[in-house]
Amino acid sequence: MTASSALLSLARHAAIKLAQDTGRRIAAVLPRARGEWRGALTARAEGRGWRVANGAADPCRLYVSEVGLEYAFGNDFWSDGGSIPRPVQGAKHLRLKPDSFPRAYFLHDFLYARATAHVREPGGKWVQVPVTRLEADTLLYCGLVAEGATALEARLIFRAVRLFGEKAWKAHRKAAEPRQVQKSPPKRKKRRSHVH
Image 1 (cartoon, rainbow, N blue to C red):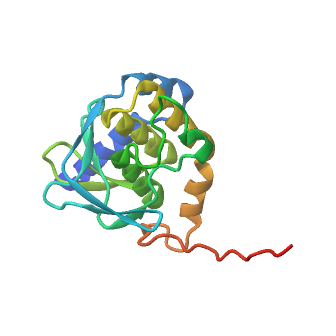
Image 2 (image 1 turned 180 degrees about the horizontal axis):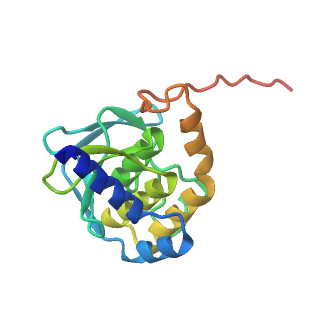
């Protein structure tokens, strides 16, 4: 076994351990989620979202202390940020806007689009590992907490993506190029005016 295949095996094992699809495991992981955001990233407004550029030398990444690994997203992709329904965005005392926790939302969008993550032990070599929807959602939760979301905010967003994110996950899997990150904003349909 080569060093890179051993690291890949370790990273995959840790990712699976991080998020097993059982209610008890998730309930146990979420309350103690600890981590921190490291590195730099650039995001500029484009259409109804952001063009995300991740630095090559010091990429933006989430360190999850429970598994001792860093998770990063790729470079040059488009993100719509947090897909928060408009009626919920106005909730008092809660930061539930599409741009409230951009790093967590960018990571989640990348994981949904690619179903893979760039993973490494701190200071090690990056390897690409497949992720499940539950793993992507759990990393979103960890990223929200690391970005300063309250426990209530993180749990509400996590539960919302668990309840309503399956359609987006499946749409990405059915896409003609399922491993390609969306490079540009979606085309908007022209609305026809109705004359009464």
